[in-house]
Image (cartoon, rainbow, N blue to C red; front, side, top):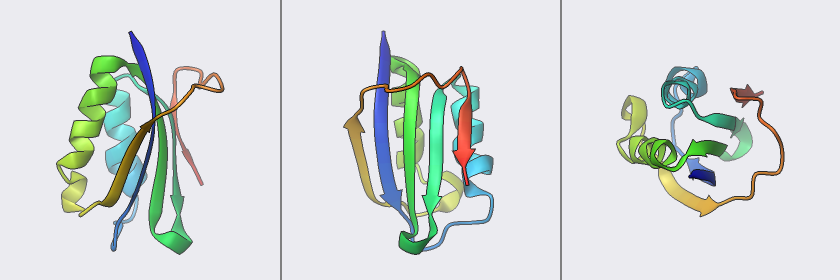
Length: 94
């Protein structure tokens, strides 16, 4: 069974290449697809993740464990309807 989630969070300090080093790398390890985008003005990150339910749940667990010792604040996870084909890739939107 597949699952799609929209994940939003903020962090006071986000390390350089955080999205590629931690988020994209973990998504690729779990064979997930979707997108991640940083909103610099708000120090916020928006993620859409799609894949097998177990893999998506593992990804959310990973975020709760403070990737890269980054303290994630206001972590919001909600169901999302897959509205496009991500072509089996997890992309960083810059």
